[in-house]
Length: 369
Image 1 (cartoon, rainbow, N blue to C red):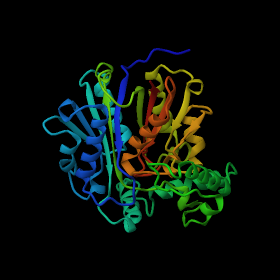
Image 2 (cartoon, rainbow, N blue to C red):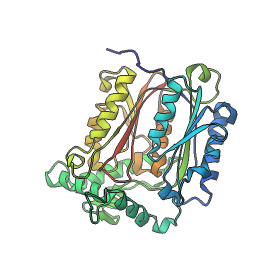
Image 3 (cartoon, helix red, strand yellow):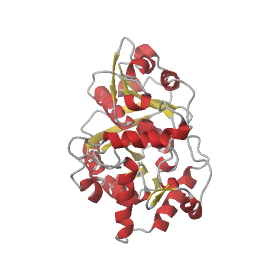
């Protein structure tokens, strides 16, 4: 049974991404201007057509307070409505889509930018330090806890109870990296095998470097439009029929370890309800999800309820390229690129600043036209 969508569909009419590399030499506003300019040009729109700009970025990564003051104009927000979310770009896309669906604007732009203000050689430690500081300092006061540690703790429970072995994790990681190798947006461009994954540096037992996301820098822009405006646009033609977001709990609630995809399940429920989908396993043909480790593949897949879709992370997912807070936009572009006419797909992204703790999840239901 297919129910009618409970929201007005929002069309994806343009999208662009920078090259994803270890470090960009350009300034943040240059990266943002580049992708917004190209995304607008793709669909035949101009800056005056933008009714709302929503930016996803984090001051602490950008190295300055109120960093959106630098990038707001580049998003098309000068003399227009604009705001910033300190979250994954999936949240920015949802905010922009809600404005279009509600009829507040006919065109909105969602942008994500990630190019931390430090050298790539020292970036891993920098991001992990930020992650540690993001945990509650007043009640939890964790010592040495970071995002990667939470992923390691979860993977340890999965291997300890016999659900998966370390070789299973390595095989799944190798499969995803190899699937994305050579892709135009890949950071890891060479196929790898199980031995290569296990030979990579150990990060947090039982996880090795190649079992974790391929950290990179870059920017992504997505142009959304109402159905009436989309009919007069060039470029892409897909539409969002449902979107949902959910926020996780606290450190002292062990749900982040025992049920790590709980926020994804709630976000997916909202998105499917909006799209009028009762049985996603019967409808969804392509999934782009952000399972940060192979140990999370099963929980995330189950939370999305898509069964066994024909294609899962065809571009390699986050193990192929993970541009920080711009990841939600990258996952959507990767999905739209392969979505066939009349086919339904799902894009999923998460905020990884504090790992599995207090995790935010965004789910988009997309229909190819």
